[in-house]
Image (cartoon, rainbow over all chains, first blue to last red; front, side, top):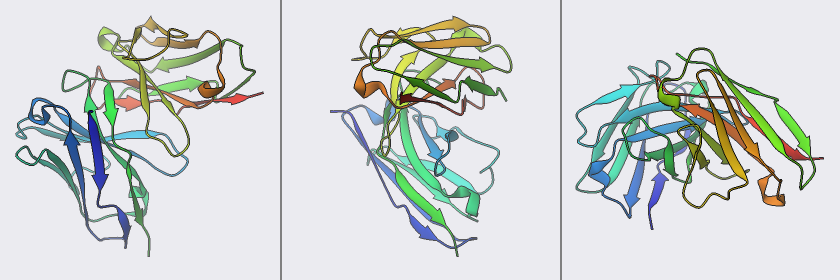
Length: 120
Length: 108
């Protein structure tokens, strides 16, 4: 079964850091670009970042550029998001998502999400 | 970036009725790279439609997508009780990819 499982969320103070992980199983992880998508409480979906299958190419939303770093370890089938200089507006459920085929594609597999709360 | 505007914000319908959801883009979406997702409370989004009109694996044929350019539509031909949820459109033809704000389909 194709599965994504996020972890690492929690409560952090403004200006703090957090690292999210997403463990993948059931597919050839290294063959797919992977994305993070977030959803603030009661709000819609926002694409955050994408990393290529080999890890050499990354893109970020303007809202997190320079503060978040996406990475992956294909030997461990795991995607990461290092979140620095966190702000209240980063409070959200963070999902990792697998594209259907191409790096820029619809997302056919989503994790269950991990909640990040930025508050003092 | 391409802004997606979904309408209506809320759709109040009864089981068995037809639902028509709209997604309008601020500029043309290349190659009709538009997807639709269903999300229920406390759950991750679920892919319904990709490429504007192709149903994802396992999606019932009461769900259909159409449109091109800047106007896209998700139609649910006959609402089942499990279809009451929030629906999002998503364009992945231009960077950054963007989502609409969602349409809630609620039981009337």
